[in-house]
Length: 134
Image (cartoon, rainbow, N blue to C red; front, side, top):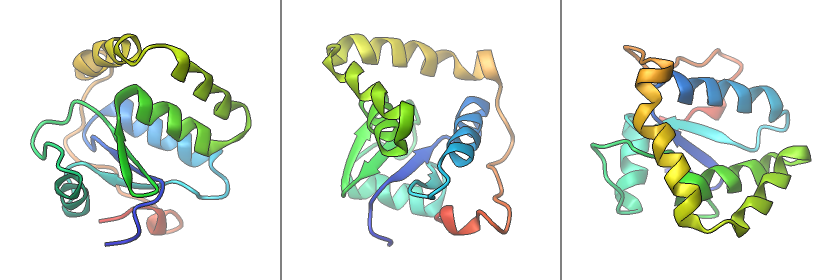
């Protein structure tokens, strides 16, 4: 397994999640973020390593410096790693987590209804393949 630094585990069949991955790829010109779907063998192993559920995917997981972050905290720390104007999102960490996660959970619970679902995970282009794990 690769070193667990700046890995985004995402729901590979969620259109919102796939759109977020595409957005991150477009703005992360330095390639500091790597990706794996929660459903992939790599993603499943990383979930087990961090003692997280391997069957229900109610949150993205951002693994940063070997520690796994979920829900709003994961999103905000991911934004910080992207740098530029996106790192300002970290200021939202002052909002109590139960409030941030309530909003996150509302989107997560409705993501398939609002954004749809794919039958398969995204396949990276040859240029991006190195950033996708598993």
